[in-house]
Structures are given as structure tokens and as C-alpha cells.
Length: 179
Image (cartoon, rainbow, N blue to C red; front, top):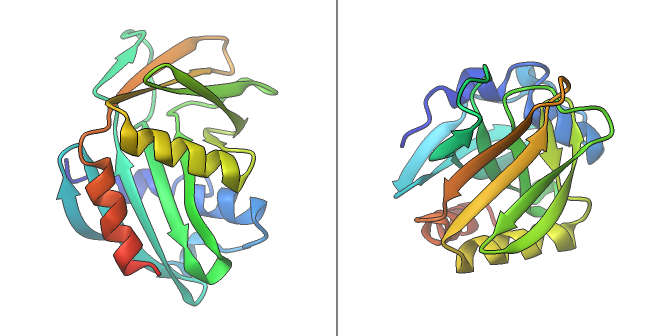
């Protein structure tokens, strides 16, 4: 599942990097980041790395195996976990949902029945804190499947189903690269 289209999707609409960077005080623009380099595929998850703002960034990414409703037009959908060692950020989870979230809404991540909440901004969603990030990643490593739900700015509830096959190996890979 090599995610080549991630480059265009990842750097669109001021990019997820710029959005999450702004939220973490890391004011990077896409022009300061190199193109992501594919590292390896691990079943349903792929690992990538790139340099930005003088530091290395590593992430794992997957796309849903199934999404509902079927008749809704959306951009590409991704779930990511990234490390930014220079900024002391590890296992930061996020999703690019493929549409603009409803203002003030939250996204839900459910892993084998365990539900956690993400805050939304534009077409992305993140955990409120590093402790929630770590809970999500630990659940992902122990789980079989993950469901992400959200509400679009038009009021459409979407459900994205992800396989967690390969997440542990993919995380181990970026753990070894982005120390």
C-alpha cells in the first residue's frame, strides 16, 4: 500500500505538517520540508521520513479499508502517526479526513471497542495531549481494527474502517530511525 499520492494530499491546503506544526509552535511551511521518502511497507501501513526545519520527521500512514457512506465525494483519507524528535514529539496521531470538519465538532477513534476523541481543525483531527496520543498508539498496537468517525461541514457523518495489520512493525521502524 505504498501511498505515493500522499505527497500531493499531504502538502495540500497548507498541509497537515503546517497545521500540526502551528499547533505545536513549529511554524514550518511546506517549502522548508523535503519530499517524504518511502521507507518500507508493513502490511496495511507504510513508513516515511523527511527533513523539515532542521530535523528529521518520520511517520506511518494508512488508508481506510472501507468508508461510509459510499456516495459522498471526499479527498483522500489518511491516518498518520508521526515522530518529530527535534521538537520532542513522539507518536503524534492525526487524520486527514478528506473534507472540512463541521466547526466545533470532534472526531472519534474507536479501537476494538475503546473510544477516544480527537479535536478537529479544517480537514484534520488530533489528540488533545501526548498522553491521549500514547493511549491511541498503544491501543493500535494491541488492536485488530480501528474506526474513525467524523461529521463534515455539511453535516454528513462518515465512518472509516482501518486495518491495524502492520502498525507495530511500522512503528518499530520509525522508532529506530527517528530517535
